[in-house]
Image (cartoon, rainbow, N blue to C red; front, side, top):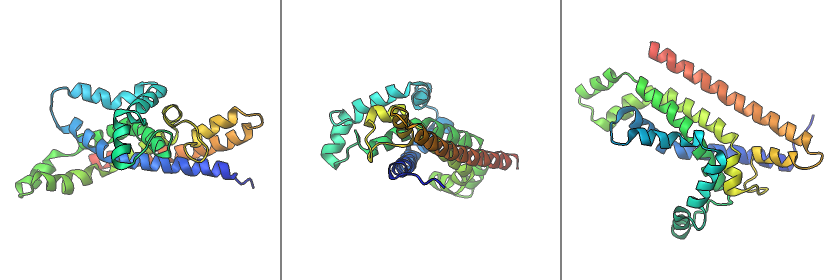
Amino acid sequence: MYSFSAEEMEAIRLSLRVATIGTLASLPVGALAAYALARWRFPGKFLFDGLVHLPLVLPPVVTGYLLLILFGRRGPIGAFLESTFGIVFSFRWTGAALAAGVMGFPLLVRAIRLSFEATDRRLEDAARTLGANAPLVFLTVTLPLALPGILAGLVLAFAKALGEFGATITFVSNIPGETRTLPTAIYTYTQVPGGDANAARLAAVAVVLSLAALVISEFLSRRITARIAG
């Protein structure tokens, strides 16, 4: 049985780490954005909706370049974070996690938004008539009903983050042991003589992980549909 090399295992572990942290870090902001789009009315809502989904239609290289401009050592946000908190994104695995989170953000928001929109507001109204305030209604009624959609959004965003390439390589390059994730490792192997077998093995791993994420997401989506029908 073939065993992965240390370099291949490092790329797999880093990809899982980057995708997990990037997805979880984007969850609070994504949930707030989804709730705002689903429930609130405010000027510029269509523009805000467009900005949220912009990473889906922009070339990933452009997204990575914008991240480099904003979060690089000389960027307005990156320079502030480095001088104030010692946080560095450019050419670090943390930057790869940021790129992964940004690219998966629209899928996360969309799934959670649909779940909030499908929540029966009559249940929320009933909780209010029983004396519950707005935060308590959200925590005890809205959030539990939307939980399957939140989980589905997390899985979809994770799958997207796991396969992120363009924004990552533009923002943090392809540094072995630091920013070389599964997609960038596959790309590297395709560029060297005799690396096709390694690239194929890693591609198979990527297919298995992504397929598992999609199957889990579909399962959760069916649970949402069954809950709504019930």
